[in-house]
Image (cartoon, rainbow, N blue to C red):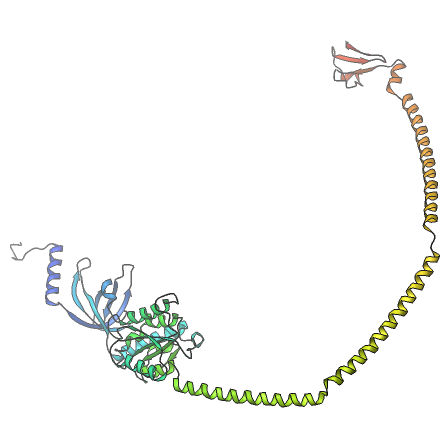
Amino acid sequence: MDASTNNPVYSVGEFSHVIKKLVETNFSYVRIRGEISRPSFPGSGHVYFTLKDTDGTIAAIIWKYNLQRLSIKPEEGMEVICTGKVTTFAGQSKYQIIVERMEVAGEGALLKMLEDRRKKLLQEGLFNQEHKKPIPYLPERIGVITSPSGAVIKDILHRLSDRFPSQVYLWPVAVQGDGSAQQISNAINKFNQLTEKTNIKKPDLLIVARGGGSIEDLWSFNEEIVVRSVFKSSIPVISAVGHETDTTLIDFVSDLRAPTPTAAAEKAVPVRDELIARIYEINLRFRKSFNNKLNNNKDRLNSLIRLLGKPDQIFENKIQKLDVIFKDIENLFKDIFVEKKNKITRHSQSLLPPKVLISNLISKQQFLETKFKNNLENILNSKETKLNSLNQLLESSSFNRVLDRGFTLVMDLDDKPIKLSSEAPENAYVKIKFSDRVRTAKLD
């Protein structure tokens, strides 16, 4: 304690704790209105942003476990009213609000946010007509996503029962408030996960419905999570949210929009009595048309029978014509056979007997064999004479004949001939080949 001032001395941590306690004691719960600025979504799952207006700013935090409870998702520029606790953050010497609830501030802000979201989803192509699926004419199973209490489900069931009783699966959800958008999205996704093998078979059609209300009451049907679930649904979806003048984003993405839940039931199935009457009328028209066609064909057949004449006369004429054709064919084949026989006879007369042909061939073979032997013998004699001449020439030119005349051949020890004296050094051993043998000598 400073004796001159009589004021206590705090450490930084102690003073931060005092400020924190003072702020939290005096501001347990507050509601602050402002515009969201620079929202941040780190991997921790918490949300950090600044709440501002023309006069100041305050830091805001939404813890991860509270984020799922909010009916709206923080977006840049959104004007909101945040409810929560004010506290301090000693690490940066600032105060902040821990947001537990959040609501859009005023209908104008809601409409602006709705229009911005509509433009964004439109640009992504979620509302394009080419993605719309046809509504089945007579669905066997219909899935209804709405509140289990209230007039909506009763109106739908009553209207379906009046028009064409169908099997209805109700998936109860909250249609407004915290977590309602997540429930609606989950219901759409779960219906699409059903198959023919599950206990509950997959519906042929989905109806997403709720009664009328303010823009805040219908806001769950403007959430992206709901719109994207409808877009991804493989089951056709009819939206029936609010009254005829109410419009939500789910109406743009659904395959068919109904102005009211009752109208959705009317669009889902035809009127059974009208359908039966129509089938009866078509059956009468079919029977009448069939009888008329049958009678017309019967009259036409009788006319054709009268034009044909008696069957016996028709067959008699055809049989007679067939006999004439058969006779002509028989005569034709007879002439062909006679001509071919005469031709064969003429050719056979011009042919030599086989014995004569064989004898001629034997004589020709013998002549050719004799001629071949003579030619072969002449060739062999000629080659033998030529070979003897070449042998005599070879003998006269032989190396051995040169040695016989007194010449010798000097070679090194590897039997390589030595032509010049420079090729053999002094005292080198050499071989000398005479006509009768080889001797070894040493050069001087």
